[in-house]
Image (cartoon, rainbow, N blue to C red; front, side):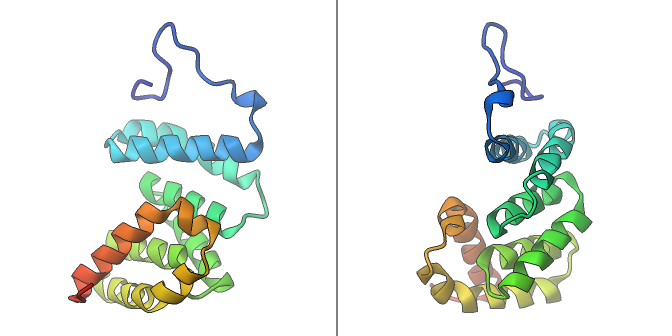
Length: 160
């Protein structure tokens, strides 16, 4: 794919019309996250509204879908949308790791170290019990969880 997510000449793009709404949302989420990791801001801005719309069509959203939509909002600069998703996750489960991670990311963007440390402490306190629940979304977002836990330990001076 090029920087706009288009397939190179001679290579056909996937037919998204044959995908389920969840598959479309997942595909767009993965594309936005990849483009964000590559620093392709213009492409993130192009695809993020499509991803957000795809998630809105899945309503009502489960926690995993809320986290995905929140992350898209985060990387696209739609911070009120990301905040709403984080708040919704934590209102359903105040110790949910993905909600705490999303809140931590938003606090980092806001340069609010007091709020960041608070969410990081909550993240570390919830780690053992929440991971023991073996939630499907924890498996799907294991890399985010692992890196966020490591960052929280580093920031708070906690040894592993």
